[in-house]
Image (cartoon, rainbow, N blue to C red; front, side, top):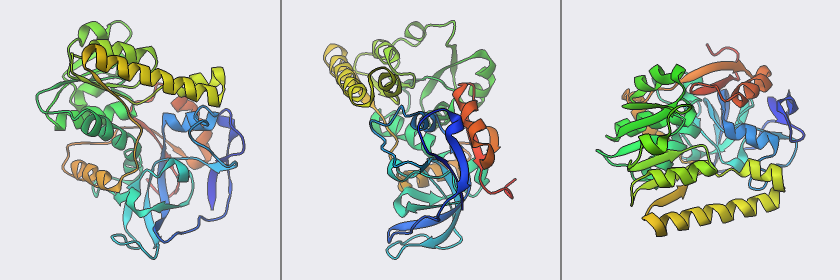
Length: 336
């Protein structure tokens, strides 16, 4: 089968599409014919080596953490899936590899694809949907009537989180550039901040919840902005920059020390609960997300579609930081 692999950490040019052996199927696995994948910022960090302190790869390695496709085989202990089912999911970092024509995934990391979406649309949702769910529902327990600030509202996580927060009954503030104001308002944002000219520490002072996606000093700023007793979910801890400066081991240690200091200080000084969120592969949550999509409460936001052979170009585009929503990879050429 064809797959996009890296043989060394580095720039987008390290991604090569080549023939590789088909994946093995374990007793708890589902083999999926991948029709579409997507590119997330974390894929770029993994490819560059910025995450190598926590994501260990045996090179060469196939990348990719989102998929939509069709089941072609099920393991001996699998129940609930059958050959021909259309599924979507985000496999564990330990078994990534959705930039490929086939992949074996643990059955509990998959759900049936929303019936009203194409594979290209469905592949845009799993990782960002799980991340937003873990941040707003699990970590922050966002409730109806609360005010939430969602940073980077036009990005992959942001576009999903705005819709999820509105479904939960919250008043949504978000930050982005003016060119994306119309987009985020169409997703349900009640108030939009221009991140270049407006200071969210002033405009959003006293919100109940903040979904913080920048990292570093922006986390400290979020902790000052949220109301006393509020909640902050941070989805990046700045590991790649620390790894680049200090190396994998020392960079990881410094990240852990900094995040512990931030969390403890926020709790002691203002009673604020700070959670650093990483996406958990969870088929049950994906099933609930699929229901919301089929009910019309959440829709995918796809910026551009690249063929698998142009995966390096897809990574370069994500690295610009200008993607609106998600960048999707067409793995099966017959998909529209």
